Length: 140
Image (tube, rainbow, N blue to C red):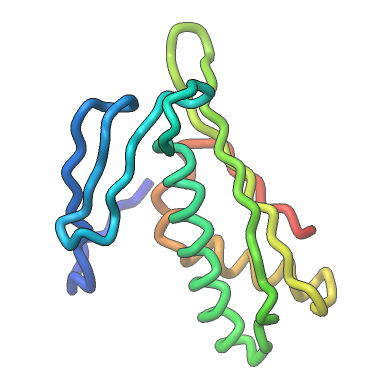
C-alpha cells in the first residue's frame, strides 16, 4: 500500500490513555473523557472498537457529503451509518473486521452505492484500513 505524506495538517487529536482496555482516555481539550472497559465485561465503559466504529461512521458521512456535492446529489438529512467492528482471533493473533451499513433514504440503490463507493475511496478511515482488515459496505 502506498503511503502519502501530509502536506498540510488540518487537525491533530491529542489523547492521554491509561490502563489499556480497562482504563480511561481523555482528550487534551477536555471534550472526550471516557472510561474504557474490556468488550463484553461489566466495566461500564466504552472500548476501542466502539470508538473506531463511531469515528469511522462520522468520517464516512463527511466523505459522502463531499461526494454528493461533487456528484450534484442532495445527501438525505436522515443519512446514517450503523457500523459494526468485530474483534476476533485467528490462531493466537487478534484481528478486526468491519461492516458499514449505510442508510440513504430516498436515494435509488445504484445512486446510494455510487455515493458510498466514492466515500469509501476518500474517507481517511477507509484509507487507513484498506488492505489491512476485511471491510464490507452494505446499502440498507
